[in-house]
Image (tube, rainbow, N blue to C red; front, side):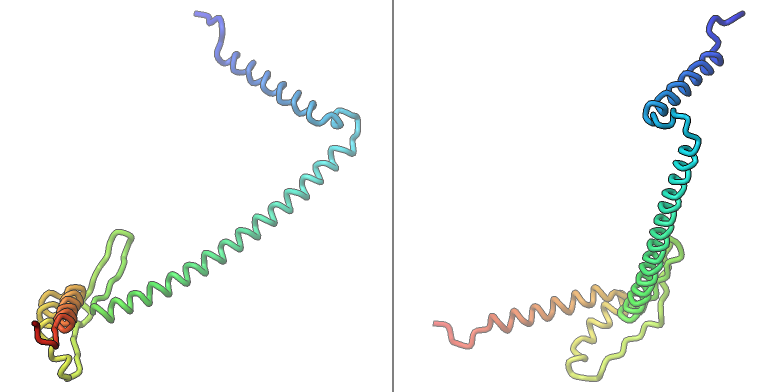
Length: 165
């Protein structure tokens, strides 16, 4: 069976038309190239090469600048992470290590509680045993202490020193 319109021949014909149209547009946009000036084309190419070299140098400079900024940001972030981990370890006694983005390991870092032997510190021994040693929760301990101190503050401010009439 013979095809009346061969797809390969059609594609070749369309490509030739596309190339001819492209060449025609180029000739229309640069009429001075149609002249018989042999020195003009190499001069234009040299000018384009110089412009491209300048653009390349600018892009390389910007790339170098961005890499320096990235390194500086990573260094600052690394220092902040170290400080944060030290702070969390000091407060909670737990050491947090990030293995991957989705994997976190928490290690007990030898949790010990040391308080000065003062009258004020002994008031909190029940809360220390209940929340820090029993539940292993610093936030719960701090919340309990805050509520107790808030209750004490309210009870001292609502007390009246004058007899009621």
